Length: 388
Image 1 (cartoon, rainbow, N blue to C red):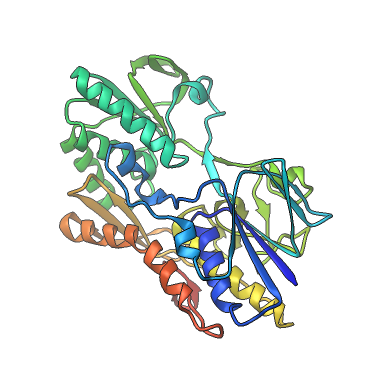
Image 2: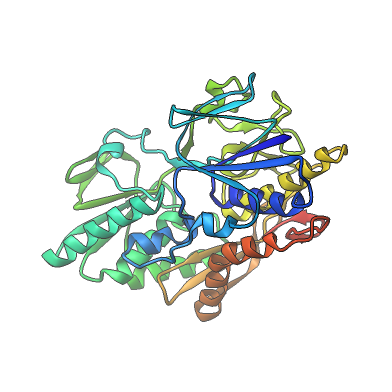
């Protein structure tokens, strides 16, 4: 029996699981185990909506896997022994593996600034988003309050816009070192900034020095009083791989070869945010857009190995950067494969429809993957590259 253990049930991990289960369903010599701390699938693409107080669909992983033959283990991964081929769960269960797929993703890096960990909300999961939503409801009841969103990347932009739209009585301040939408083309960036202005979001370009219980202190500038702080500035990964002796980069991501296998342990694959995946244009950044294709490719690679064939190299090209600006506005920046912006972008109503289609796509995709024939092929492809 070839034992495959998949750690993490985010976009990349669940893609790997359902795709691999479909491709091996005719085999009786393969056992697949998925480990996740929660039995609920977290729609990270929608956490800014949940944080603003909206109810998300209750998507349960065991229901998706029912009848697939996958064994679901709920619990926290507390250790990996790469030499022995074992994983420890909740410090009380030990799972053996022949092939390990590491997909535990990343969390907000609240360690880089003093006070951020103690005094900030994060979007690390549904629970964190719900805690922020509860705090915003309290401020609404008081009739006043300031919400500071730390980090002017696209996650921060989406969160600030959503909060400003859903909680019009609150002051929303977006703080970061770069202009919001800096990675977009000029037209898309201008549209994004105007949308934030219409929603009443204040923009402060500054470096954050410290977060206190009632303020966000800036380097060389006046502090911003804060009744709630959301931290979206940077991410970090678990130290589990490096502690297990698996080769990682300076940020703790597993170093992979061209097939997404660990460069130090051939029985370990890494997908999603926790993998350092190099392409011709450089290092992939962690998003659902790239994570799901890494999951599909890993399922294909493992299937090939089980059949005595060599895995093929992974190639990926970006397609777009969709940004919601509340429920009634959005901007979609189309990109070159290396993620640099093209001239074309969508705005307004068409962009809202496009963004909603993208946000809704993963769960139906998982359901379609389950119905794959065991010899079938399912992937997003454009120009010879995986894409979304």
